[in-house]
Image (cartoon, rainbow, N blue to C red; front, side):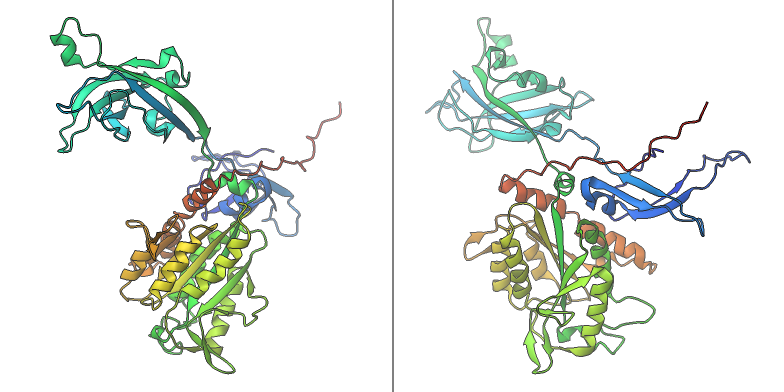
Length: 487
């Protein structure tokens, strides 16, 4: 039996299948076939399985073996190609009184309603009528939205300091024409329509030639996961005194028997999705900012399970259990230092830079960071490694410093050195608390936003190191051949 098709957007969304599926209403008494069984899983479980192929037993009929179902996932194609091209021009019009021209080009994608949208601007080449522009890359979907015969308009300008750039001329082409590469067919006359109307002998305002055109397919997060890249998840929890006494209900670490605290909810929301991309489900869990027995020295990098040699916990439930146990044995103290746990994960990431593994550190904290300079340096160094950092702020503190670490607006730097990539994502948990008290909805919203940047960050690392995904292992089949009736 072959079943299809389930399309899901969130990698942590639960998926349930019952076989066979009932018809749409209105139902008739004979519409229902025999119930064969059901299975529950997440999309992440399927994607994270070898060759993105998950085999699970069907359940649902007491005392009966229902067989197994094989689930596979395929990413829908959405024009993932990137085009890299280079142009030069010859004998463009002279526009500057004391010089020649400072030409640049503007590329426009045509829309279905006949309008045009800017999709790329080249750099300005100063004081020349025969410029050679640098090669540039652009997604094919941005250039023509996947329609290879859609018009692409290119305008050529002479740059002016005051912004009143002089129009030299324009030409049109298509992606299909550009794909022919460098040849006489890709030499375009640059035409200024107004000059052409005024001057009878006007021919053109120069020519633009395509020098090179290369198309490559952009690899996706799913390509790397299907090729065997493992996501390694580490959690670091803030045990500083500013969280409040764990035995009191006002504490952020308070263990209410009827409801998870903010730390547990953040951990569960993010961890339950990421764990599906890790084959062994064993996760290092660290704490920072507490005094540890027996000598009660402050530690900013201690294992929640108390085992320095093996800080791994079995699944998210194992981390939660170790977290609750730590609250009973350590003394909350301070300060709030991030650098030790960032460097801890970075040491593991540094040892494996071939694309086979990618490391995600989740830091859950309540307060203002104490070692900002050291943390910035640690993040700048980690940006060169296969690693991402998620910071979830709990409580009502001001998190201005965390926004600075995020680097969405201004790339983080340390000692004059700019981070190679943006690897930090910060969110305040309070922004995701559902007003109706629906914690499941709060956790789903949080997980969606904090994990949104991980795929792009993984891809940016792989591209920076020219690492391509491994081939997907060949699919195998354990399905029995169809039964035949004897004649």
